[in-house]
Length: 233
Image (cartoon, rainbow, N blue to C red; front, side, top):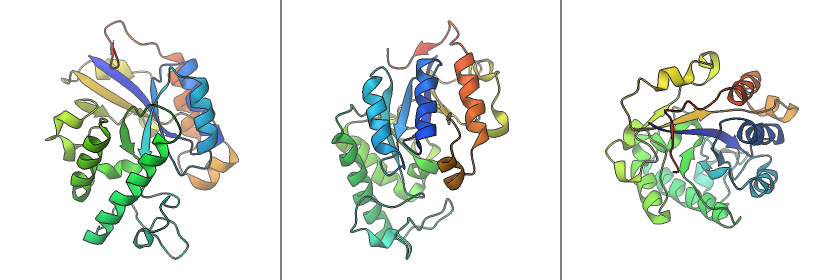
């Protein structure tokens, strides 16, 4: 089985970014995905360039922070922040504006000089059914694979892996990760993780805090079993 251990939220804060770097250099994290509107995006880019063995993709954002494109005002509230929550209903005009905003985020990533490894999204918004045509078009336009979601199962040509493991999160974070993965029927699987050091900036903007340090410690103590193949090999 091919396994990719990916860390979300690269660039969210400095502490999260440093934690992801440590989970790569001292642990089993192989890739990460960068938030182009994070509080520490520039810092994350600098760190990524110092650690070229860490594959970096993009963490498309729609439910946190502010858009990068100033013209997509239909996507924001009165304070300029994204108006969407995880259960939002999308309008046709929203979908077109989201495509424009995500293209802006992708172009911003390409301008930093790092190879684009894959696409995923904050809160799995790229898996929202109304956005399936958008993410499919972007994957093909930028020739880059996308994180598996059920809504994209019928698009295997653009998927990064055949399945995704979402249970390394919260109270389910434990050392039994690989024993559970071994029983999956997929030939390739991505493991979503959220390691990080907990800083004051993180506590101000996220409800997922202390568990990030628990994830970090565990990801630095686990070893890849000999039956695991590298997704990038």
